[in-house]
Image 1 (cartoon, rainbow, N blue to C red):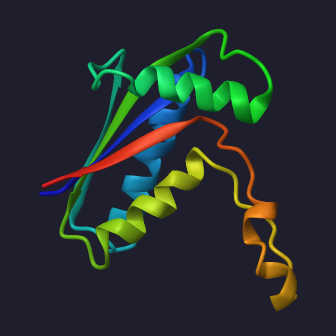
Image 2: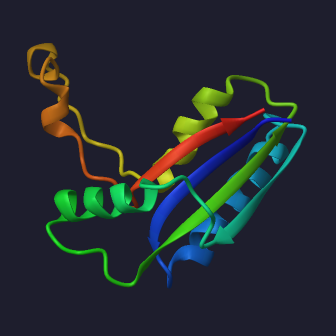
Image 3: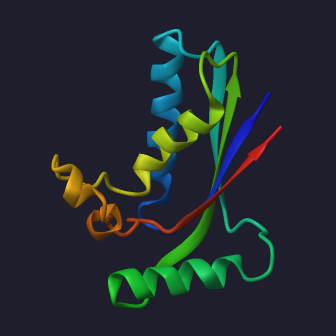
Amino acid sequence: MPVIQFDCLVPDSHAATLGESFAAAVERLIAADKMSGGSARHTPSPTVPEGVEEQLRSTYETEHGREPEGMGLHRYDIEVEGLSGSVNQLTMVLARFLTPRAELPKDPVLLMREQDYELPATYPWTVSILR
């Protein structure tokens, strides 16, 4: 069974709520028969490869213009069982909890510079798909 593993820099005061959001999404997917089973697990202060936390902190500071005070590293493991669809697609849908959706213009010429409309991640993150 695949596991979508997000490692995120999150304010410690929001970490449990974010975990509940992932768990609620899994429950909705099961109720809608998009998955046959699954779960979401939150792990505070996980062990990550060297440099990952520093990179997330640097990303936050660059994108938000301030230091990530009160933020800690948190892991969210989403177990996926019997998914009807792509694990990669589900990963990007779940990433919406971490990065806001950008409002893109309808003009195809303006869309050629899509990166101009991207928004910084609310919570900087990395993701791995474990099989």
